[in-house]
Amino acid sequence: MSVYAISDLHLSFDDNKPMDVFGSNWEKHYEKIKEFWINNITETDIVLLPGDFSWAMYLEDTYKDFEYLNNLPGKKILLKGNHDYWWSTLTKMRKYLEKNNFKNIDFLQNNSYEYEDKIIVGTRGWGENNTSEDKKIINRELIRLEMSIKDGLKKYGEEKEIIACMHFPPFIDNRFINIMNKYKIKKCIYGHLHGISGNDAKTGKINITEYYFVSCDCINFKLKLID
Image (cartoon, rainbow, N blue to C red):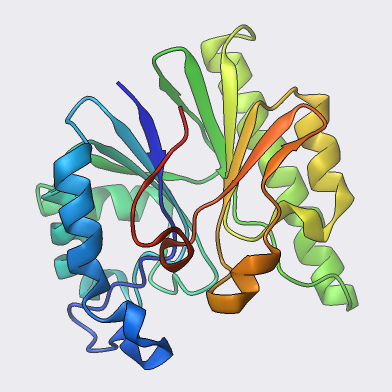
């Protein structure tokens, strides 16, 4: 019973938007992910996917992408990324999964999950901190992160280890880090960065939190073991 993570799958089975335009390492990347996944992940594991799951513009166009994910072992928890334009309300997305009999997938959106002795929380975050609009979005994301954490503590108690998921790197604004410290977050995963940008991703322990960078191309399309 382990926790794994991988982000930025950028699937496009219904949208014909292949990722190999960004480099030969992306050629049939979904097959690389699948091969590692089925050989290493069990049905009792949980996989966290913090953003940019599908290129689809609308929820009804995500069927093949979710079918691909549903057919892989383990429980999957998705977080919204900046390219997940298909993302809708929690109620609508869950109804879509139920309608299509996708039973091992759920979403992080102002809520939390319990897995063994851990609490899974998170929010998207934001990538810029320059304009007044950026600052409004970041303030909203800070509220959502704390809301998710408080939801987990209320539902599952204060003794469990908390794993926080973000799509954007949390280091864009120190207040995200302050929240991690305030609630004694043990582990934080994030993605968003690709290619050479991933070389600048911060990982390892900062204060009391261990940070993991899990954009799929930067981890060689192999899920990263978190716990």
